[in-house]
Length: 216
Image (cartoon, rainbow, N blue to C red; front, side, top):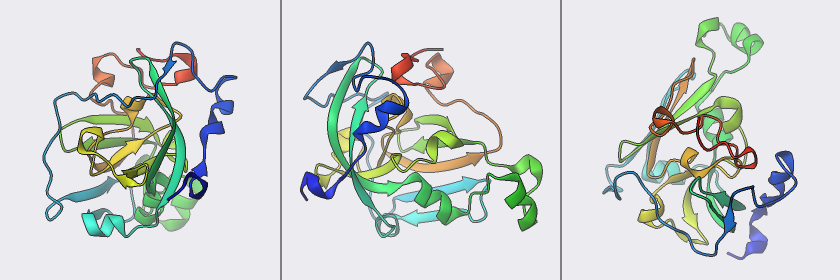
């Protein structure tokens, strides 16, 4: 697949700042490998992706079922909290809104009341991502419901390398990359804010690269 087949979303920086390269970042052509505890093993025969919490229908998807979901390829920028950015990464995967729609996430009060199947306290407002290595990270639902938030299984037209989060990772080009869980295997739609692994250890909840929101 050529770059012409990818949707270019690198202009999203204009929502947040005047420069494509956020302050305090350096551009690199490399793609460094960082993780909290090494690369976990996985088996495509037993791998499972779950969607739970404040949804109409909780999901449990096998690897083949996940790959059968509607997918797209995007050209994105990638910003690591440690100070490097890689431009024009080409990721292929499933957008967050696609999964949210499949599970029936209800985040609007009027819609929820009309459906009659969710109490007001059950409104989804936050999301927790979980991963095979025990990692977690969180974001407000509104920050997730963007087409640029992808559950990516391919990079530059090839299967996502395991040390970069394969078989599946989240990419969040509008946030520092620790908000994009590697080896992701589930999401929970929450009715209140909870903190993930690095957020509990002092990293920023909001993680906006253009505001240098690295730490709380």
